[in-house]
Image (cartoon, rainbow, N blue to C red; front, side, top):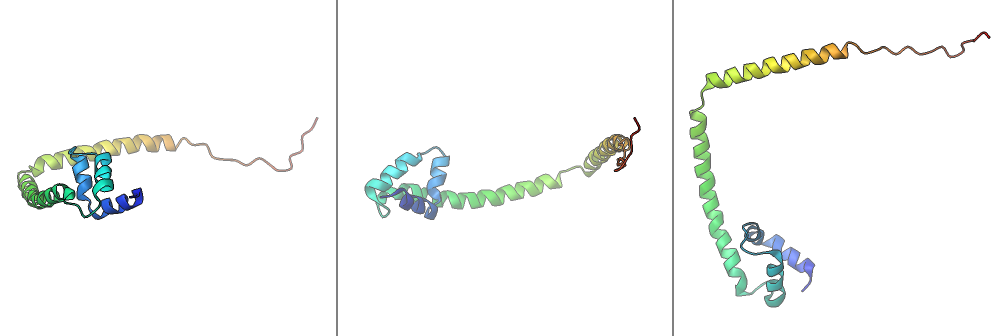
Amino acid sequence: MSKDLFKKFVKAHPELGNSVMDGKTNWQKLYELYDMYGEESEVWDKYLKKSYLSTSNTTTSRSSSFSELVNMIKNVDLESVQKGVNSLQKTIGLLQDIGVGAATKEKTYEPRPMYKYFDD
């Protein structure tokens, strides 16, 4: 089996990458399993089935995290947010004023005469 075929197999089954990221296995072990058993072996069931279950759990956890986010937004004190934004605007204005003062001190370019005659 070649590495290119293994790469195609992994691209077709991204669940294998999730197993590696979770620390359950590494790429070397997966490649050795692929090399010994091939693509159609039952060895892959434990890596692929678990990921399908985790995908459904991820979907439910995403919906629950979205509802948590909505609840968090409901509890935000808008007056404190407005005060923070105002102070940030003042700070940015101050920094711009400092930058504008430095920009006005630029020297203007005066080209020198092309055919200037110098007396000795």
